[in-house]
Image (cartoon, rainbow, N blue to C red; front, side):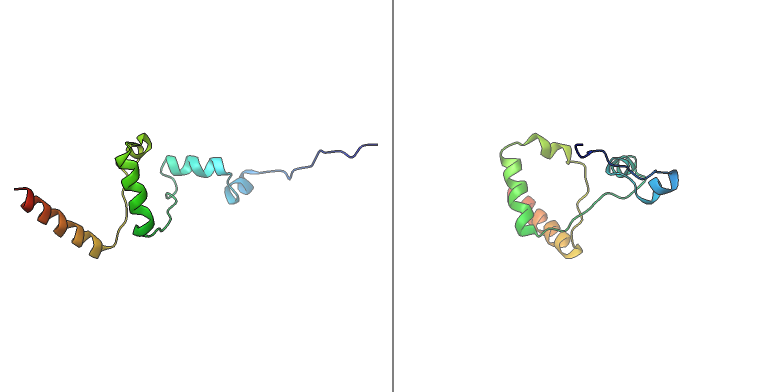
Length: 92
């Protein structure tokens, strides 16, 4: 007799589902704001060239993230503000 390929899955109750939500449930929770967005840390050395290339080549997917917030260190933010001010003065 051939071996059966059927497997018995454990019964999933509401409490089990809440303890182990599926990927789809987690994504729905994230989209509706019920759970925090997933984040990762990357170095500027890795991040900036990719963003610059995407902007230079007009990648449409970049527009999808145009309103997203990006977390940066406060000291980098101050440097960027100073640089922006300097560039505006040079243009005037």
